Length: 302
Image 1 (tube, one colour):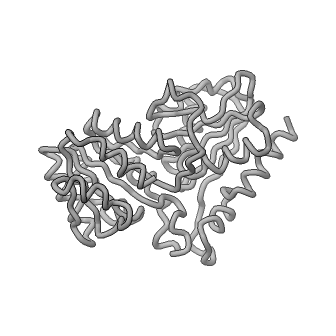
Image 2 (tube, rainbow, N blue to C red; image 1 turned 30 degrees about the vertical axis):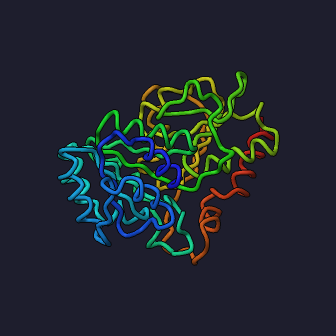
C-alpha cells in the first residue's frame, strides 16, 4: 500500500505539504522525492524529533511522518499526544507493515498496540485501508479535514477492491454483499484480501457479506445494518482495545441488539517462538487456513 500512497500524493502537485521519512522507504519514496523535492525531507533515525517537528510545520501546512509501523507510532507516542493531538494540527502518521507485517523480525517490530494507543488520543482519526481506492480516499480525507490522522498501511492485493465504488467512503465499504446474506464478516487492512480470496474461491458470495472498517470508529459501525445479520465475525490484526471487535461489541450493547458474534484478535504474543507473519497470524486464528476453517464451520451450522 505504500506505493499506492506515494502514487496518490503525486496527484497533489498544487497542495502544499511536507512528507518526512525516518531514513526508510528506499525504492518506494523516490518518485515523490524526485518530483517534489521541496515537499520531501529525510530527518534521519529520530522519530520523536520528526513528530515534534511535523507538529510545528503543520501550523502552516499539512505534514506526513512515515516509518516502519512500530517506529512512527509507539516510539514517539508522547510527541504524537502532546505535540500533534493536543494542538490538533494536520499531521498524518503513516505506519508501514501494521500488525505482524514485519513478523520475521520478532516482537520488537510488531505493531499491534498502535490502534489501542493512538485511537485513544484526542482529535485523532485511525484509518486502516484494505484496498487501493481506500488508500486514495484516506489521503483525500486527510487533506479535506486537516486533522491528526493515523494511516495504518499493510500489504495490498491488487485484486482486492470494494464492491460498490459509487458509494465508496472512508468509513466502511462492502467487498462482497448480497441482499439475503445473514452472515457478516468485518475486518481491515491485509486480512480483508485474505477473507475475500476465500469467499471467492469457495464460492461463498451468496452466503457471506464482507465489509472493511477503514475508519476505526463508532460511525463506521453505525453505517452498517447490523440488526439484519444472524451472525457477525470480526478479524483484527491488533489487540482488542480500540479494535473493530471492541467497537462492534460496544455498539451491540448500547443499542441492545442481540446477534451471535465471534471475534478474533491478538492476545499475548510475547512468548511465541519466532516465525514469519503468517505463523503469528495462525496462532491467533488470523491466518488463511484458520479463517477458512471458521467460515466453513459457520456455514455448516447455518
